[in-house]
Image: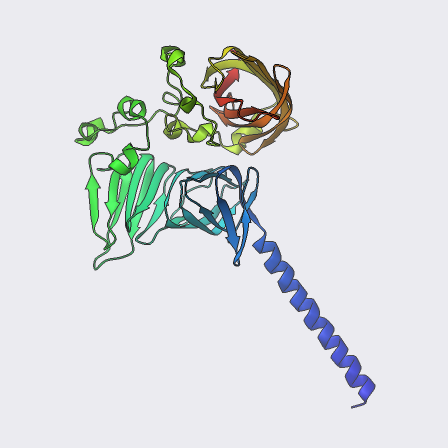
Length: 408
């Protein structure tokens, strides 16, 4: 064969090989960077690792499929996934995102997460639960769900489980004769421990590991005690909104200390008093709403300041469901050092509100901060949290949660 012909053929073959290689590279790269969720809160040392490359996570940082999220000592993170699910990781937790697929129109998809160590709480999202399409792996068991709020924590090799709302299905993966069982609404038990050797201990009472992480008010109001689980008739069915916020009028504001100010980066959604009650509106219901709606009736709030008791709190925002935007919003209140003010706007993102503070002040001092929100009750209410701080003196802070609705 003539050299020129051979050279031409080889060039064409090499070109095709390059194209094929480029195609696979692009396909792999696009999968690798496919977004699984985003960071709402990152407090302390929070890292995401992919292919041995680590990056620090902060507020609004993306979390990708194939990421492993690690929280250090005295650190925590809260993630919102693409189907609206919320994941709060406690300190010294390692969670791998193996797969997270979700189609917004059909609510179909598959997800697989691997809790390697530590603990988390989660409110599952809009992903339609079917057999095998949700899998939370741990070293001793695999967890499936049927629409739920649950908690899982690995402690000295044992897996502690709590089904606060809905049902979780557990398949033990270690031991001589692994069990399969369910916890939650309508089941015999709501709490259990899967031991490192595969043995299962069912509990009538909240494990101390979890009861220490929730307020006594929450536990007693919901009858989460041993007596509440002694027979089927007494099983607690949580009302999604009755327990969102305790009556703030009964709280003695004078007893609030600096420790009561939620300014550590913890989201209002993660406040222990309110965790189990959050019932986020599915994105398709949000999409059905239309028109320009003003949310300016404050049902309840937990906003405090490290500079004293607050007063004269007002808040409002307009939501344009047709354009998917929040054109205007403002918040104002006073503490003992002067008035706080914030103006904000944003967009609708699935069931959430992505809000940006455009201007904020405390007295004569410029301020900044963060604000987030989620739709509740068929998008008739907004549950959120806000954090404000002076730019030049960030020790001066205010923040907390709010529950806003349309005027009745």
